[in-house]
Image (cartoon, rainbow, N blue to C red; front, side, top):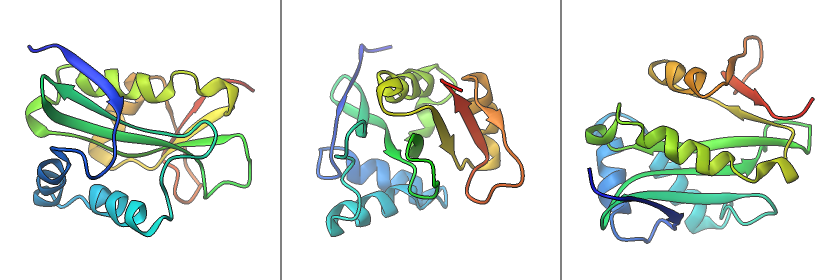
Length: 148
């Protein structure tokens, strides 16, 4: 496996269009929404504590994900993992967990917990990272508490 590197990215990075095409082929819209929100200025992942990271295998962008203050929560200390997508060829190799951990790293200064709204096939991925299943909350399937 090539050396993996996790760095800040933007939708105009080399490889984003290919990753977006893969996600659309799987009937996922998260990267289409990420790009549209970036281009409109609605979400640039640039508020305090926020970030948009890509994971590269050599020169190839194989995954992307973001951390925002959760816009759907009234709690200003709520973070939200957003638009996390990994190329199918890289799933099941620990690459997604590396990206998720990089997104979570350093967030304790800004957030007390992280929410996500995951598709059902990703539930195990989040639960393996310590997220707890949440029921009865719209737009939240899983939550990770870092401070109570």
